[in-house]
Image 1: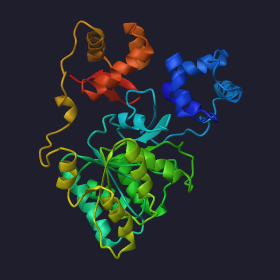
Image 2: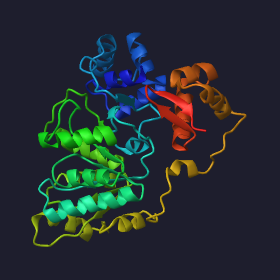
Image 3: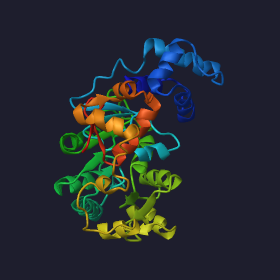
Image 4: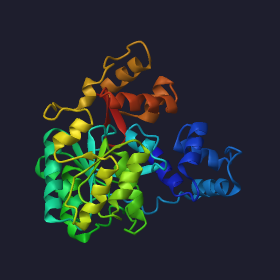
Length: 362
């Protein structure tokens, strides 16, 4: 219900992240916002146009008519503990994400690799190698499924047996470019596809810059392999810099147009990336020391048996429950429940299951 409500709100004209978060603060959940709109019990500081838009959305539920998801697909609302924490840093975070594959809300071991579609053989080979090296040490690789550098990065991670996240600039019903149909299938089967667009949304020029902010938000670092002076990869860099995500670049020949953007980044202080070891060193990480999910090693891994955590553990060790059911049984309220689930998910003590349910991880 919460995911469906987020999709409905996402379709309301003029409802930006600031107004959305204000409504969530006032009502607790996206579901509660729609219920308030049906009662016409909305905050008085909303514009008349936005107020009417919310009331109409609550009555007609736009955005759900074309919401047929592929097998294994799901919708993750901004208010969900499964929502990637890094995306909350964005100036305009998506209110709802369409996901195909297992979504880990902890993206702290994700590196985004981007670059030009018109990549040289050297560029494609380098992106493939970097992604494979990162995958070998347990890091996840994200990219935009475009021609050139993006595709090489995804394939490098997949061929190394690692995790990779593809973020298309359209909905799942459309493969763009069409030549990447096989790559889409591999990402859906062995990786993760993530989009802010309903499945029916077709690719369009204006959607790709929006997609790039998601690639920045998912990442610990953005690595640019090849990029001309006006490459779309530089939009990803700009969004990364806005949220203090590390930017690195692969040096290129000075007489190659595809090197102009990356060499400019290096001149402006970007880190030099020639190997996974370079990338991990810049992040203060050691290469070759990965032993599994880092979440289990986070401090504070013991449960507080006497507080809300103890209640939660008792419930979730015996059965998988939705957040609404947990809130009802514990009396915590949905906002506090979602906050607690989010923290415990990041610490590895609670695991999200298909269908929006949760179980104790130990």
